[in-house]
Length: 139
Image 1 (tube, helix red, strand yellow):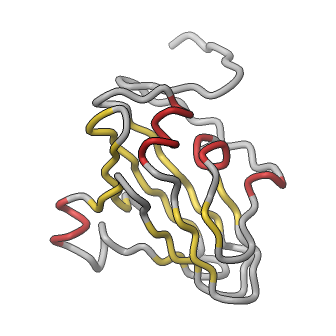
Image 2: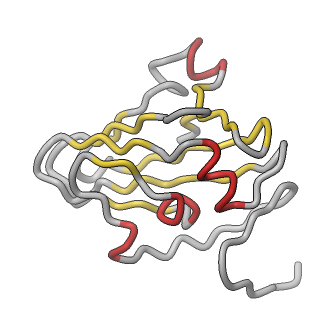
């Protein structure tokens, strides 16, 4: 397979693109709403000593930042390995939990990320339109 280099936000609807380069702009260390710019990097860190809730941006804001259309898919990694308390992820307007998340809340619907060595989680965001997404924990 050939190697290709991209710059800027990249969206793949049919393949896998993984470039998760953490920066300080991707750190959310207190309860807050993540910006679309933070989410589209695909990688957010937290080092908080207190319980933290990260609310995702609205479907409209996230869709616009990605140039999303129906069928756009992206992965979001939350890294809480340097944190000292749980991180909880929440969806915003036009973001809903997938059927798998609703049916199996203990796995696909688990929106908490433990602190410490096991504090990594992958979530998949799938757009049902340019302004609405479905959210599922996938690892």
